[in-house]
Image 1 (cartoon, helix red, strand yellow):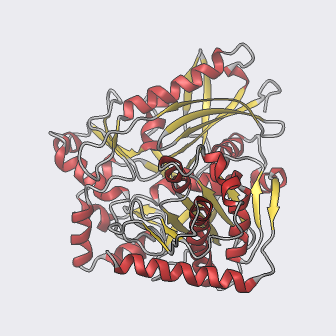
Image 2 (tube, helix red, strand yellow):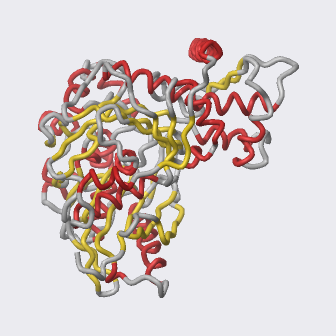
Image 3 (tube, helix red, strand yellow):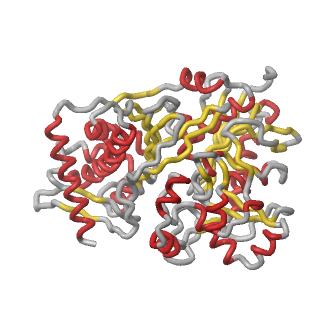
Length: 496
């Protein structure tokens, strides 16, 4: 690597915002970042759409702001890494690169009825065996089918080779490279419900089932390599790393050993546990997904998605129990426990291990002595209890204890939450130095892809934590808390 290369540029395209983050190659610390909001449109109940062209524009605006600073020169950037919200899907014109319809977001439920039909046809076992996923509108396949069936002329354009499709990483790389690269990485492909994770290929039977022509899909590549170049300010910068956001976080947390497990506490909480190089597809509510492929080294992961985590704290603020999100730890610490109060935060249904999209939230166990401190504490405990159920399922599925839970994301700054989490799982919780491991993971991949970072061993050496939370010795209290939680969930589901 030439001496003038000092930085890695990470592009992080998320659900509600996109960011460009410049990392120093010397110590992989962020030196500059800019972000832009990513608006969403909700045309009907359960529908979520975004403008893919606008997402690309906003992401490039973040890049431009970094290099408008006199301190940074595009010529000093060794490579670009990209990470993105997963499952969202786009169709676009091969010639112009412009989207032909709105991007359908991962939260969109417009194909839920179609998914129920697939389940009634008994296709769940076949689809999970091939993809590691459950049949759900969350994943890309049914969204892509909907776009092709409901965008005027889409099937005709596809037949003529005029239309391309893919998840957002594929679309963004196509635009960034001026149409030179139509690719996706294995982690994003594994979230489409069209990709066979056993042989790492688009699956012909699934393409036929969903009516998706294979010719419109991107070529699938490893997470690190040389995937094309983006021209900026007359400088050509190679794109060398790609991963879906949760896998990028796994990499940013250096979870490269079997049993290494991380949780990203964002709006939702996403828990991934490295299961090694052989996929284990079980009948449990856990998903099996591709964790990464780097330099030929392949790893899979169990994944559990908790739909409401940081959003619980936001809700407590919205209803007036908190003046700010940051106040949650102080208010909840003002009481010894939640005094039997449980919040089941099914504001958008429940993810793993329940996968119930129709469930609604409940608040149980209140008395006249209940205070806002008890309710706020119950909210924080609900996050830890949901994540704890997934953690326990993963340990059972692996057949061996998991390692310490590595924590990142905005809500991981709440020390009480992580302390309760350690109690619930009966193991250490270690908070990453970097709050945003997602963009860091993309930067690491780009560094490996361009040769500036010497593989995953160097990532392990560079990774560090800023705090460790030990489980309480009062196991009886934790058992009672978990039993009460299960009873609260049962009551909530029975009441629907």
